[in-house]
Image (cartoon, rainbow, N blue to C red):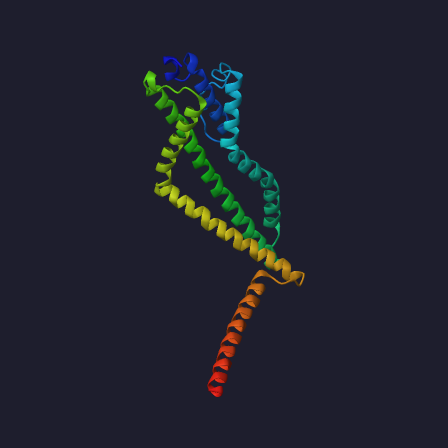
Length: 242
């Protein structure tokens, strides 16, 4: 390609600008910050159909996890909020007091976990946004002989920029703290889920996880005692026969 590929949006380099704008548009659809001032149609319409189709396939592959996460969160958000409101209105009295309190703790833990996951997803979206800005800057500053010639080179540069941006974020104190908060929140959520499930199993007179763990521990101790007694018995026999 010619010197025009050095800067996105200039002549033959419009296909680069189109690809970057498609990435930003996908981030906006996924709820990311993106670049709200960018012109959505300026570059996309100038790229050829084969190039645009290939770019969209890579785009969908690279960003599909954001859509999946956002969709899964939105599906249960409405029902979860309604159930949490119902629990909040129930008075903590009567025979179901402990069960109601357990459900309240579960919903609170789930809300905390979802909020932290949303915050973490925002950080990852910002990483991708900053990576796209870095791609633009690098392409703009390159010499004509270093111009991007195909989608493969553009994709490799995008991955390299993403790794560079994420490396800075991953080593920050705020990101490490957020990761720890997400992990701790997930552990608390699992504990609250287990507490609610065990109460339900006890209500139907079914064995719970903690009861099964106790049985397994007792069986393991019995096997060890039997093995020790058999070893002592064999040793006594050998001494008697000798």
